[in-house]
Length: 259
Image (cartoon, rainbow, N blue to C red; front, top):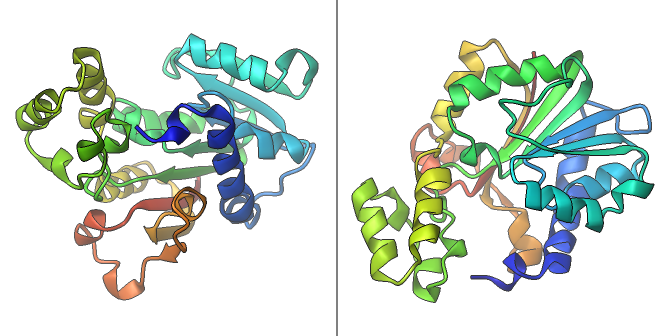
């Protein structure tokens, strides 16, 4: 497992770097971010992605299904003394009181963990103001590390590309063979393998629910890798932006869309 997954300050630093350099400018081409902007992050985890929005003065709400993550976020972000911050521990399918409230819905590396995206993606409309926008950034399932194998305890598996695209029983067997714990294996199955999403399926969901894509960007080298691995960010060349095939080598996608 990478150090960044256990060192919270390093993880926050990486998140802040990518958001400030790449994601916030991407969003701000379509929606101004200031003290009058209400932002919702779904799957906020420990709250690292919320910091750049707070620094811009936005009114920020973070929701995460894990109560422990929200408790950590409250401590890390000093929630009691941050009046423009609200943190909610709840399954997004059960959350109440957020209807028609937000100018921006933000999700990064979360969509691929949410079950039943065909139900969830259109549900986001209920949280959005009529002129609001949604940012989605996620790794297509078939990309080299779309199985989140970097989270494996085994150093070999954490660096082994594409083994996650095997059948479910084989994926489970490989994890077991290399010593991953039963709880870790179940976590991979429940919130990675069973919730996987391809770029093509994501686009079909948008089309079916009459979302309008305002801007998109596909990356061959994820902007996160710039600070994580010292690799230069590379956008996917148009010549390689081929439906289905691109899922195998696109490490992340950014989309801004609206109702």
